[in-house]
Length: 366
Image (cartoon, rainbow, N blue to C red; front, side, top):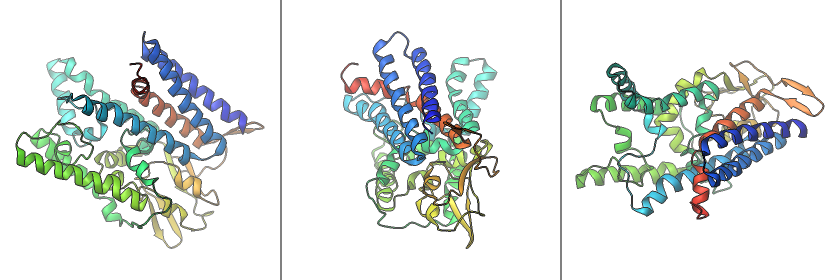
C-alpha cells in the first residue's frame, strides 16, 4: 500500500540524512551531496515497497555503488598517477586474512598500542552486519559485487547454462581455508598477491619482473573469465559464487543472522523458475519434488520476485511466515519489509561514505 511505502522510505531518508549531517562536518557541499544520495537510496526503497520487486531496484543501487567505488578507489587514483602503498580498506581481503587480523589485535592489546588495534576494529562492523542481514552483504553492501551483477544484465537471455554441482559450489569454502592457513603462515595477503582480479594499482605486486608477470596473468585471467565473460554469457555471478573468499566466509558466519530465505514446499509447484534464476547457485534440488535454499543465498530477492505462487519468503530462523506483521487499510508490513529497510539503511550508510564525494568530483566541485 501507498501509505506504508511512503512511511518506510521517509523514515529511511530521515535516518540517512541525520547520518549525513554528522559525517559531513563543516563541508556544506558534501552535506548536500549526501542528502541527494540519501534521497536516491530512499526513492529506490520506495520503489521496492510500492512495486513489491526487490531484485530490480536493489540491483540498480548495487551497480551504482560498484560504479562509484570503482571511480573513487581505482580509476581516479590510476589516472592521477598516485599509487598508494596501502590499498583502500577491502572486506574481501579481510576474510582470508582473519587469522592475521586476530593475531595483530592480540599483539596490539598486549602491547597497549591502541593505534594498531583501533583501525582493525573495522572488521567488527562486518560482523555486526552479519547479525542483521547476514549473507545479504553480498547483494546489498559489497562494493565490488555490482561489477559482475552489471555484467549479468548485458544480455536478455543466457547464452550458456551453468550447472554447478554441490561439490564445486563448496569450493570457495575450501579455498578460504587454504588462504587462511597460507596467509597466516606467510604473514602475507595471499589472495591479494595472487588471485584478486580487482587490481588497478601496484599494491602487493612483486618487484621481480617474472613474478609480477605471473601475478598479472592470474589477476587478468580471473578478471576476464569469472568477472566479465562468464557473468555475461551465463547471467550468473560466477566470481562471487565460485571464487570470492568473503562470500564463503559470509556463508558460514551469516548463519547467525535471523533472516532466512526459505521455500514453502507445500505451496511450491516445482516449476524450477527460482532454480534457473538464482545468480549464485544457492538453490538445490533435494529431490524431484523438493527445492531447498542453501547457506550461500545472499538474499538478492530474485527467487522471491519470480515465484508465481508466492512460495518463497524471508522468514525468521527458518520458520515459514508469509503472514503480515501488521495489516490495516493503507498499512501493510511484512517481515521482508523490515529486512529490506535494514539492508537499505546499511547500504546507504556505507555507500554514503564515498559516493557523494565522487558525485562532487564528477561535477568538478571538489
